[in-house]
Length: 298
Image (cartoon, rainbow, N blue to C red; front, side, top):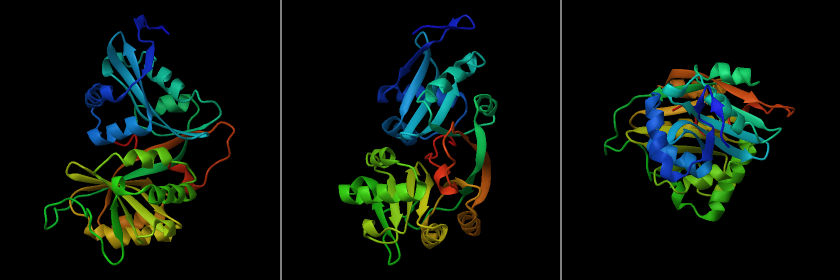
């Protein structure tokens, strides 16, 4: 399908594959975002990455995360600076919203906010990026990889068997109210993603924390608990064993966990609107709203 936007043929939209990962990374670098390569590869594994081409030049991208039949996450909506203000962002967003009467969720940048409001998105929360800078541990490693204690257990996601993985997926579904099976199955391909639990038995989970090593930084999330208290207690139990710089994103109204992070030395380095276009669907609870996996914060 071809179309003219301000006299320039930029109408070719196609699904990208893992062979385009370097092209997308160059576009991300061009707009000044910071997305680690391993996270971008994860997006290709668990989402649908679309590219908007001007002839053979990648002019824009968007990633669509189809969590379940009525919830879609949108991330990395990017337009090359040379092609901005030509309607490309609108066309990409229309593709993301084309699934019908579904809840579309995203984390907005300042640049994208007017576009989302124009398309019926409403602010339903605020995402806080928390950061903590610390020196490496005694072994020079940035995290608690493969360290088990009497009070928590660390498991590499790629080492989990099918039964334990399904228990984690079911637990996440109960807590978040969103089916993110594709996310966790995608994480099984990463050697640098781990899960912390308070028990070795995944069918008895009260809480779980996922974290990933991204260069010299640690990215924590999601943090899950049967109740906010479960999540906070597990976080407080293990956070002292994280060394090196750490990032953690959460909803601003997750008061109990936010206070625990601040006590552990985290400070807010960025806030972003969490936006939804819900159509005729009923609202989700607070725990169900944050269905993105740090897709747009960078």
